[in-house]
Amino acid sequence: MTGKPREFGGSRVRPEATGYGTVYFAQHMLKEKGQDIKGKTVAISGFGNVAWGAAQKLVQLGAKLVTISGPDGYIYDEKGITQEGVDYMLELRASNNDVVEPYAAKFGAKFFAKKKPWEVKCDIAFPCAIQNELNEEDAKQLVANGCQMVVETSNMGCTAEAVKFLNANITFAPGKAANAGGVAVSGLEMSQNSMRYSWTAEEVDQKLSQIMKDIHDTCVKFGKEGDKIDYVKGANVGGFIKVAEAMCAQGHV
Image (cartoon, helix red, strand yellow):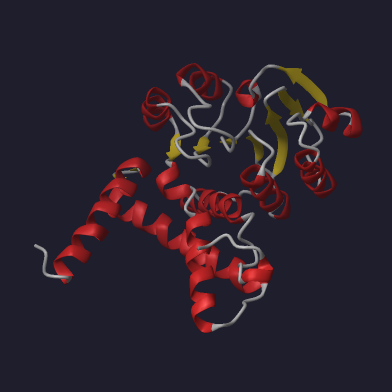
C-alpha cells in the first residue's frame, strides 16, 4: 500500500507529487521550445491535493498563477497567487465547505460564480480538478485567448473532443504522461519501504523531477513529427513499446 501517513512508512512529497510532476513535465515541454516557465501566466482548476501541488511548484518556479476553482466557481487573482495564497488553499480544503469564494474576500481577488477558469487569458492551462472538466468549447476559448499549452493534470480531465482540438492546434500533454508524478512517488515510497529508509523531501523531489524528464523524453522520442511533437502519440507508442519489450524479455512473444 502506498500513500500512507508518514508514521506508517509513507513518503515525503507524496500528497503534492501529482501536481509537482505535471509542472515538471510542463517545464520540459517549454524547454523543448526554448522557453521557461518563469513569468508564464497560468490558469489551473481545483483546489485539492493535485491543484495545491501544482500551484505550489508553479509559484516556486516563478510562474504567474492567476486562478483556482471549486464547485462554486473560480477566482481570478490578477496580481498572481503568492505562497500565502497557496497555503490558504489548504485552509479552504480543511474547512470541508468545498468552496473557493472566501479566497477572493481574503486576498482581494475576483470571484466568478458557477464559471470555469478556461475563459481567462493565459499561456498555460492545467485542468487539475475532475474528469471531463475541459470540453471542446472550453478548448476553443482557451486557444482563441492565446493559450499556448494545456497540460492534463486530472485523470481524463479533457473530453475526447477537447483533446482532438487541442492536439491539432496547440501543444497538449495527456494525463497518461503528465500526471504520472503521483504514481512515480508511490513507487519511490515502495523503494524506501524496501530499504527501511526515508529520503528527505529534497531527495524525493529531485528523483521525481528526473522521472518526469524521462517520461517527457520518451514522448518526444516517439511523438516528434518534423517540427511538432505529438505528445498523445508519443505517450501511447512509448507505453506500448515498454509493455512489448517487457513481454519479450519474459518470453511471452
